Image 1 (cartoon, chains in turn purple, orange):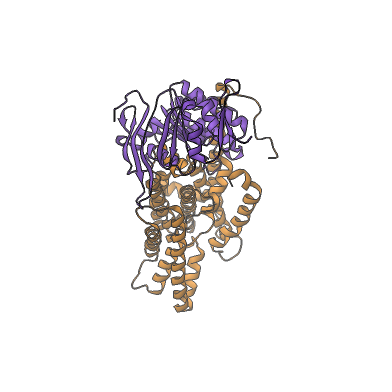
Image 2 (cartoon, rainbow over the protein chains, first blue to last red):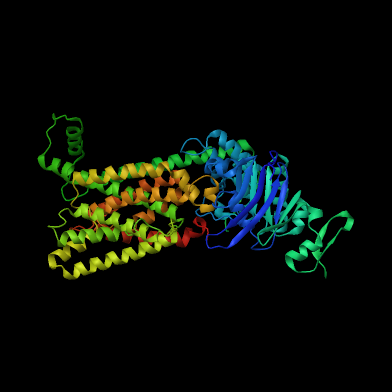
Length: 262
Length: 360
């Protein structure tokens, strides 16, 4: 396996088996370059979340290697890893009425020096992150009063405040309405434009075609295919994944995946 | 949502900074108001009681005791009432309130649940069992407070040990084992009550209702010595306690070790709560209510919540102790008062403010 020093995130031969013997990931290898958005695609139970948890250091005992900017991720301490990899979960599990600013400020934790929270400089970064994610207007609003979509944008702002070069997002758009989905994806594009490597789990193949540079397709714990989106997501591949007749059409040169009987 | 919770306009970074600074000032003022309330409650407590004191008496006793100036002549009775009876009692009440309230914040934060209180892992039932043992078998357990303290810590340790499986201590199993340990200890207390003679039964019952009537300087010192350092540790960990609200995966992805953090926080919170239960008996509700009231004023940020809750808890128990001594000719046990005042307040809080405060 050749080392790829330019890759922000490089997985090679990643396998994970639970102590009970159930194998979740088997020999998964792909890379995410800085400044690109990579879609992680696959049906439920294909091992996407496990892959994320391995990258975040939440699961230990995986075989194979995870390299971050060419360095083995397992040599990093938790705080060091948190400075390099930010994570946005599928749905925020937050309890208690934290203000949006307080919540976004939590993203600064791996950079804090003292014990007592963010400095003035940190607060400038926090404000910037809220503005990029479009939640600055809610800065002083308790997160308990926000809608699901707004909360998801706040979670994105928190990850932005973390200022990591790699961002992992677990189905960030799945619970949102159409306009918020587009908003999230466009924000991700502009984050990638700043040189961040973005890896996004999603269930919508069209989102991948529209917003991602590259796709990695997981199926039953194995990497089925990886590469540029339009060439990789073929009707045959989708048929293997879902067993439902799907078609890819290009009206006006625009790629679209839809059910065959439509 | 009835009120328009969402600001309509966009803010510039400078305006956002101003908003943050204003909120900070508001919170500092609120903390100062709480300090003032605490002082007022302490003064009221100093004056209240069957022996009437004048301001001059109090000034003279404080001058003599604190600065050693014996120039003024103080009536002997006044000095005993102020320095031997009321002062240690006030300090014990205030510090106990602070201990329970800060422990309550830490427990609620650790379990990510606003309904948790510091006795949920068996500290109070453990202490009750220890106290009952020492009342029944004074030769074996000579020191009631020490026995109660040891049993309170033992109860929590037992819950933690029972909840541990394969190197992990999930919060849900911890709550369950706490309930089990609590039930076992209370059954033991039941057996002892059944075996006790009338005088012992009365003693056990009164102990379990809580009270500061026996308070002396040694109690006040012992509880303070354990509570203040514990509260400081919890306050120092307040930022990380915030992160626990995100859930374990997210807090770990921010570089924090949630299980280790919970162990440290629960240890110090238990230490503070156990010390005050051991010396004042079971005082319900403070540890549940003070954090809620503080959250209403300061939001969820534990950097503010820990001191605010501590101040509110101290003031609240001083107030209850004032009522305990003044409402009737005889003294009302503090546990009864803290619950009768506290329960309706909590009901109001949950009915009226619950929606704003918590994610369902």
